[in-house]
Image 1 (cartoon, rainbow over the protein chains, first blue to last red):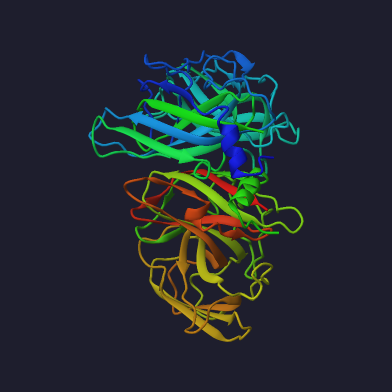
Image 2: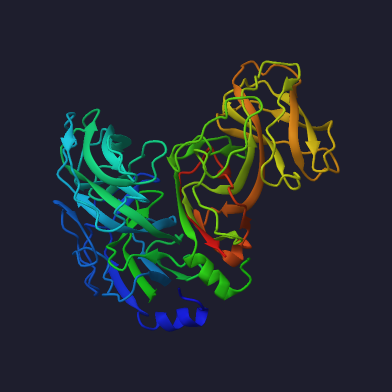
Length: 280
Length: 265
């Protein structure tokens, strides 16, 4: 337990400045309220080690996986974000609305699902290596190769946080402004469930029109931060959060930190993320 | 125990929990309140209680934001909120104390409620009276008169709203009913009487609630981030049935995504 603010400050001095950035997404259009995954976006040329994540096969990931936000090796059992600074560069419009950054711990990832098939597609996700019960773990539909513009509903067969198999979640894939790489949708779990331990299969009720490639990503939320927009084109916005304003967000020392962006429109600005952390 | 220092808050957050919230948008009428209680998402959808006397929901009730009580004599507080929304307006986090349903929008005689007893804020002090719609009644505007028992235990009190529900109605609508002059709370509702038929039976009920915090979402921000001091660190009662309602500047509210941090100490 970090028992005093002075102790928190002292521990932050060990990891005071972790910087990495991503360039603006291209072709990652999104409709209002939908998610954008930054996993496949390349880093800017200005530095940082936040590399483009690979298209998954079916594996558990951690902080050493290429694509994870570059957290150093941590000696301790609990890690907390004590400050966060977000910087985005808006270029595409005369004004840009605010958006929400959700920091996630990316646990397991798959790809290769076909957005035109209406037969059951086997997934059988790799085993969780963190939060192994599945409590608080959510499943996301993530696009890796463009799918079609016809929205298709689907069901996901999974095992919940209590180890009960045969549970059914629902989701949509494809549709207007949800076809591009990085398009992200959370799967609605069966009533009463509070997490996902593993996913066995998915079945689409119809075709999106284009096979593309999408997959299941299992992830657990770490914290959320608001990046404010600006009324000016080519604006460079900086948002700063101290430990109070980011709720002392906690993450697992082996976390594969992965930001999701929730945007009100089709914006996809660059993102620089600077974190300070304290370890207990 | 209570959190009385910054160090205590630091410890309380480490001992606390985070609640993640995600709801799709609701169609509304500008300037009218909407309930996210029956909306799907994270947490899953709640339901109408299914009886005119209703029930006293808790943190375990489907639809409530999930949290567990602090241990022993410790208390829990709202320590941080970060929410994004694509629509401007105001969101309210509240403790849903009692809810009823199965009232009929075409009945013009007194409809018996005799609402379930409060299990939190049992004096009724500071408890608000709302009407909540689960399926649309008709659009003919009527006055709804509520007979209730106030915070002092005095029965036969009367509250009314002249705007039940009117045109541009939408499912999930909530209507605040001002209490009788001098009253500062409500313990229970005995009946509801409409001044005439609205034209459609629908399904509505009474919701008794206690506000925890308001979150205005301005056009400039399209979201909010608030720390413990911004929020006033409101206390969350044990077993609270935390839920959200909102008032939109336009014809939709949400989608809403974000996180609440509960500190315990």
